[in-house]
Image (cartoon, rainbow, N blue to C red; front, top):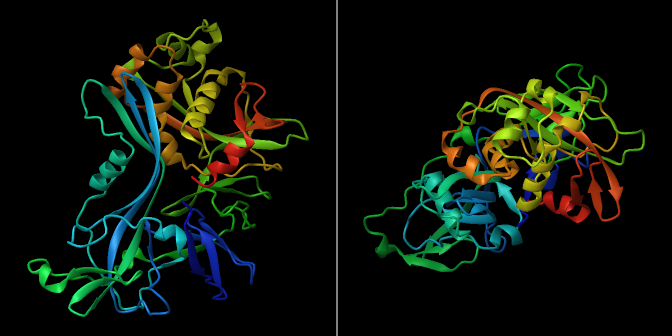
Length: 412
């Protein structure tokens, strides 16, 4: 489900419509580029029915979750792509979800000047995520058969449904459907609170903090690069932060470079400190080479959103074939694919990739609850891919990703 949001340009005030996944606003009128910043999830409101104003109303919060839920169980790795909205307040009469309305309508960011009241969120996000897991039939109880659960590539936001009180009843402001009679709300007053300044969205110019040049990156990217000083910068709550990045050189005509997060770490619970340790502990069908004893263990996580099966396959193949890669200091070259999975998500995926890369699940899966990472370092590494018709193929590791799958990943 792709949601589109109306956003005013901070420079000229023009209205720009962009996908919800975009964090970089490019104004087609004045040409400025700005990074959208917020202290938490973005918050949107559904439009009122007809041309009615949505000012001065009571707005009800719905938490939207979009992402992939993974379970590592005794039977293997299960996954589901979930896209759902769930009511964050248990007020009687409210629709349990918003259905297809966020997809069918153009949303707006909540306006602090509109004078609306906001029904408070009383259900915790974890409880709502449990509901999302239940939708995907991923509700295995924690116990001896469940070793790990993770949410990867998730996108959280709040979508508010306007309510209208009229004719002794409460109506859905979008469809005008009558939801509940006012006299049925005895003991549950619909009292809202004022706009919280912590919800405000602000803008940050996309200029390189090191040299002041304009940064490059697509609207949905999580990392931008500077072609002038060859630095890379990730988005975070404090603004732009530098990224340690490298590139495995291709030739001068390499058509595509795909990004991976290289997470180098020690895993004491499994006695894994080197790549050779990993090969032995995970019972790989090849013998470790002597020089691998000095090679720190690294798990490679795709820095792009992909379908779950392809995400696991790509990370597994690069993790196993990492000894063939020789990255050098990063430099901006043509055809760098945007990073759409932030480093924080990659770190959450480490246990999952460890499970996906093992050749002996019985030796790894039961230890996942005890796994703690130590001496962690992260690098962003771009790997060259060549065109093989319907697929992009990484020559050293053999990773193959369908072109359609890569395009579809931008919508996850």
